[in-house]
Length: 103
Image (cartoon, rainbow, N blue to C red; front, side, top):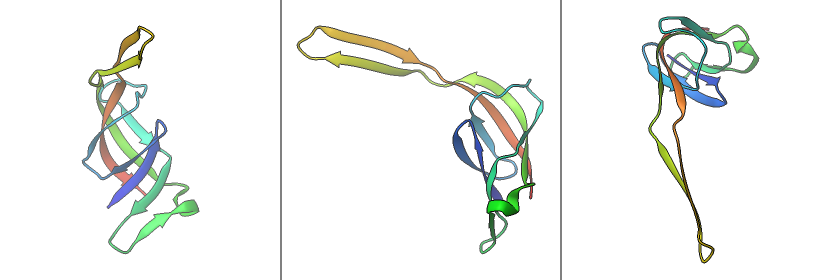
C-alpha cells in the first residue's frame, strides 16, 4: 500500500515506514505531522483510489530531523563582457518518517 501526497509544491510517493525529505515544515523533532492533500492511494495491484473519494484521506508522519541540503553552485557568465558571478544555494528541508496511511 502506498500513497501520493503533495506538500511544498511537490509530489511524493510514500509508504508506511518510508523516510522522505520535504520542504521545511514548522514543528520540532518528534512532532506529529498530517498531510491532508492526498492525490492517490494504491491498496493493491488492481485497486487505485483517486479523486473525490479521497476527501478524508490523510498520511500521518513524524518529524525526524531538520537540515540543509548540499550546496549548489550557480555560475553566470557573459562572454566578451568581463561578467562573471558565482553564487551558492543550500535548500532547507525537513526529514519525516511516514507512520500510516489513513484512507
